[in-house]
Structures are given as C-alpha cells and as structure tokens.
Length: 350
Image 1 (cartoon, one colour):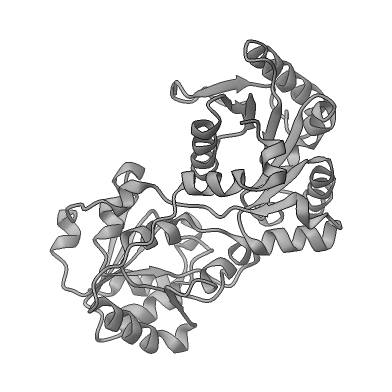
Image 2 (cartoon, one colour; image 1 turned 30 degrees about the vertical axis):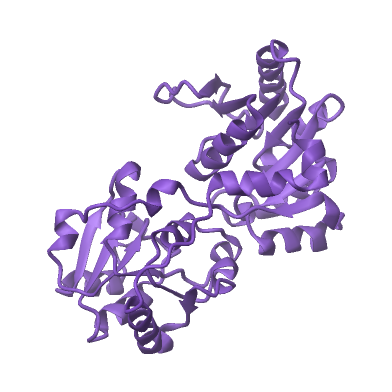
C-alpha cells in the first residue's frame, strides 16, 4: 500500500490519483490544522495541531505517522510513503526503517513566500538522501538537487506535470469569448507577480491580434501596477475573472492562440506548468516568454521576449492556418513512465 502526503494542491492530487489508479491501493491524505475541507470519498482528512509542520512537528509528525499505520494495517501496512515537501523530513526519518520513502517535488519550495529558503534547501537535501527515489517535476529542479545535494542521479527521476483527456475533447466556446473579434489570443491562470504584464500588453498592441482574453483572478498585489491599468483600459483586452476548474477546458479551447506570459523569476524557471500540457492537448499554437526552462525546451512552443512579440504573433498565425495538432500527455502516462524505471519499481509496490 502507498500513503501519499499530501493532496492539498490540484497538481499533487492529479499525480496521486493516477498513482492510485495504477497501484490499486493508495491512501490519499490531506493533513491540516484548519477547517475540515469538503468531503471527498477519495481523500482522508487528518486534523493536526497548528504548527504540525513547523515548530510542533515533533508532535504533529508522529501523530500523522500513527494515523497512517492505523489506516494501512488492514492493507498490510504502508510499503511506500510519498512525501511532497521538505516539511515532512521528521516523518521520513521516523518511517524510513519500516517503509520506502519517495519524495515528490512539485515546486521550487525555496521560492515560496513565507518559507525559509535556507531551511527548505537544507531539509530537502536531507530528505532526498533518505528517499529511495526523488521525483522532480522539472529537469531544472532535478539537476539542481543532484548538483547541490550530491545525489545519486540513478535515484532521481523527472516526471513533469500533465493534462487530462477532457482537454482534448471538443467543447463549445463560452458565450463571452465567442463574441470577441478574432483571432483570439488568450492566457489562463491567476494574474500575479509571476506574470509578465508588459508581455501581455505587447501582444494586445499587435494589430494582427483581434482580442486578448484573460481568464483568471487578479491578485491584489497587482492592483497598483500601471500596466494592469493599461490592459484594463484597452478595448482589445477582456478580463473574464476566475472560472470553475471544471470549466477550464472550454475556456482554454476558446483561444485561437494560447499565451503563457511568465515573468523572469526563479520560481518560473523551475516550474512545470499544467497549462502548458492542457494547451498541448487542445492543440492550438502557443507563444510564451522564455523564462520557464520546461516551456523553452518544447519545440511546439514559440518563445521570445517582448521585443520578439511581432515574430511570435507571426509564427502563431502561420501555425494556425494548419489547424490544431493535439499532443496529449496525461497523468496516467507519467505514472506508466515512472513504473518502467527499476528504481521506481522498487519504491512503488505493484
């Protein structure tokens, strides 16, 4: 049996669900000191004292480990425990004698606001050395860990984020987007400091762009940004706000050309954007800034800085003439690829 800690983000949940489908026996846990989330039959909420992952980890982690033991007893015990942040180091140290430890690193935790970067690096190094297998969502994250932590590369793997089959299915355009002048360039996701607003403004300013659709909430931190004000005043730019996650395939498929406008930040460099794989499944042309290593390696994506926007638009419109070409890489595909690794086979019971 596999115990997965934790499924408190969409991207970790997607990976965990696929792992559960493959293994047939997985405990998906959601430890928290906050309010109990909405009931989900596939997820086991675990209520812990405030500070369980920090100053009170000496209390919280043993509690969590005992809960795993009780839950896993009926299934023969937890042969593998998957942990997802360096905060689980105390638990990994306690459990390593009884279970294989797998570290699934889905982000650059050193860049998280409020997380001590030095502590994250130190604890992540120790966690990787305990783990039978360390899985990173990007090659940039894996390469940094191997170099800085002196890891055995054979005990590391890259498993990027992925998409769901529903993104490749035909869908009707939402009415608000369907009425826009084309060609419609669009970006999906939260507008925050990770986003290059000037890049978006340059796309909107290109005379060949009919409309720029922005689907996602705007974080308060951007409200004083003059470029945001300029985008809001531009009649070609349309803000559609936050949309339900279940409706995102139809919103993203409504774009003639997808835009991934990441700013030059360390977090963006190391990330694995789900939106990249969603757009690849939809099949429309994609233009992007060059600041995410994983995006920059994809031949299907045309990347460049603000000065290159006219060339990016030109390339996208040229590709658009040939129709959509779908490239579907699902979460199940990721688990299948991991299962072919000898190290992964030892870490994940079949």
